[in-house]
Length: 145
Image 1 (tube, rainbow, N blue to C red):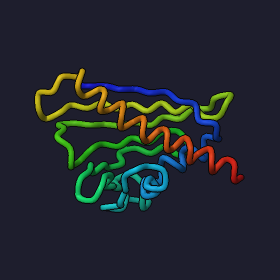
Image 2 (cartoon, rainbow, N blue to C red):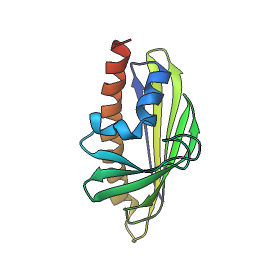
Image 3 (cartoon, rainbow, N blue to C red):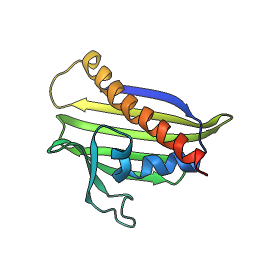
């Protein structure tokens, strides 16, 4: 299993940062790929059980929200579109003197025998793109308060 963890401080309050990450349908506002709701969640449109297709056109991953703790944590798993046996992503938020500490972790087990040395840079690239975009969007929203 390959694991990648990044920690970044966002210059925005936790509730704004959470809203940016939890609004997966809005990812196209700050990422170079689209996100489309495929199935609504059990109790909320983008809540637990919701499945989003994230990618470009027909190419991309289908991700299901498996845990939401408002203002604190978002956990998802890949349920299609990638050659993985298992892929779990978690975004954990904590207060920080300069805003919000975002800890983003990905644990991935490919369905093909690929070494971690190959998988980890891919995970890093995916995480970096999302985190940079979400940081800019969070800062923008915080400035509009």
